[in-house]
Length: 258
Image 1 (cartoon, helix red, strand yellow):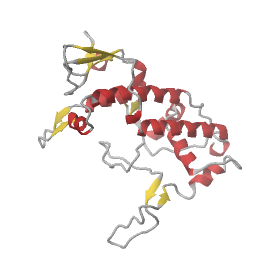
Image 2 (tube, rainbow, N blue to C red; image 1 turned 120 degrees about the horizontal axis):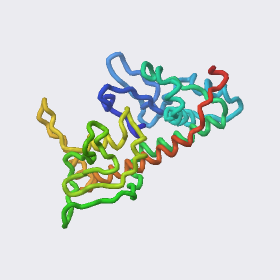
Image 3 (cartoon, one colour; image 1 turned 90 degrees about the vertical axis):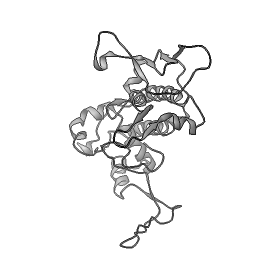
Image 4 (cartoon, rainbow, N blue to C red; image 1 turned 90 degrees about the horizontal axis):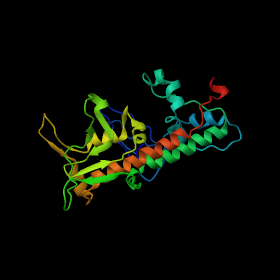
């Protein structure tokens, strides 16, 4: 979920975008020009058949395209949905079923709204306060990050050797008492926290020699400890996401889709 038009190369394998709104109106432009119309106009990203398809399952019940948009986001987080359609999801775009009752539809839509706000506005959440920050040195700590890493468990190898309750943030700071439940929120088969640990770093592209320094973004934000705050915020996002996911209704398919 993104709050703005995303680069289709945002994910390494490429991506597709399913926007709630399309830019401009219905203008097609000429053969060799692009015309997105009046930027103040909004054209729905849904096909004309989408809303009636769902309204047919719940006659005389109010459903808007916004409801449907967030219903989709909610149901995509359902563990039942992901398990039932696992084979299909590996091969094709998600197919969105209609659930058995209108009340279940509303529950998924409500969850989708909450998840959408949480994931788009992750910068605004409160950093998780349940961790312990240990400082290896006295004096003013440095929050500059080179490469975060999980504490290593002696005698183990691979992912099993990573103690994900403890993060070595840098030579100054160690973050302890990280709740393991936060690892349950995964994005593209990796926990959201693992993505932060992997990408919030200083790296050099081998081909070009270009340096990608996450601390530069912290400087832009005028917040030296931004990488640490981001990690703590993603703990909050992960825990709150899993609370919503665990509270989703059991997936029951509407008779029209059986």
